[in-house]
Length: 396
Image 1 (cartoon, one colour):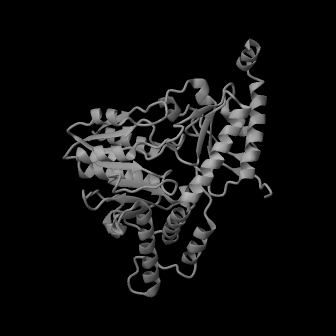
Image 2 (image 1 turned 60 degrees about the vertical axis):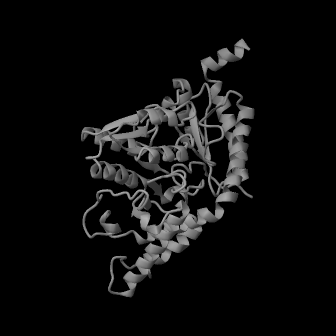
């Protein structure tokens, strides 16, 4: 296979739309353009049918019921919806929320907002791999705890949390459990009932669907979860999220779920093989390479490593034909170290030397080989410019 440039290895950030997904979406921009809320003619009926079909498809990948799926614009909205909705609905029961220090910014910022409203939030630490301790969580629960929100898998290092154990604890204590699963849905098997997840957020564009489309799973039994509306207006989405539905985006999300379910076993095996090829290839060339995140309990597509004696921003800038992410800055507009890696205990030098590789459905073996050779060459050149690296070499 001939290499095509640039090579895309930033699939945590977003994924390309799968051609099958795009094909399903296209009619709903043109011939099937009806409003799903129009009940008096066939254009609306067809749109509504497509939306309900997609609702079933999204529910299926989670092991949920279609009536438990609320469509949103993406995981950020779903996360806000879950936290704000629970906080407002159940504040008479309690005002304590538990989350972790390495959640996505939309969770952390929503929690900060709720703190200003009088809620108390505990931010759990994580271990060196980026995992939450269930024992620490248990010891943090209070009589007034109403919600636990722990991400399924971290977006920077890919570490998967012990979600089933957290869910079991939450159920035991009669506390609602929400999980931001934007990075995990479609990559690993999720069963909201077996894992006792009460609310779950997902986004289409992380799983080869369109941007601007997502969903919130909201449990309807054992327990029945109620939340206050996010948007008021026409009463769409059971009155919880009013507004004209994004029919093409919803159709795309549904089809993306179908494709993920069909491809997941073989896709996971292939991507893990390529990920290990990339890691071992880089490790062979750069022996001081450090793996960030759990060595086993992590997403198939995730490889986060630190290259000692370099600045990752310089490395990423030098990779003209390879799209990867420097995690030395968790927000591109603010050059501050990654709060995820800091919470995991990495020192400043390793934080500044970290790079996130995100493999995906369309990654090829040829791309991995090229990436190993190119990255290794660039890293070695950058290390030669480091006084500390030269001292180390002289000391050997």
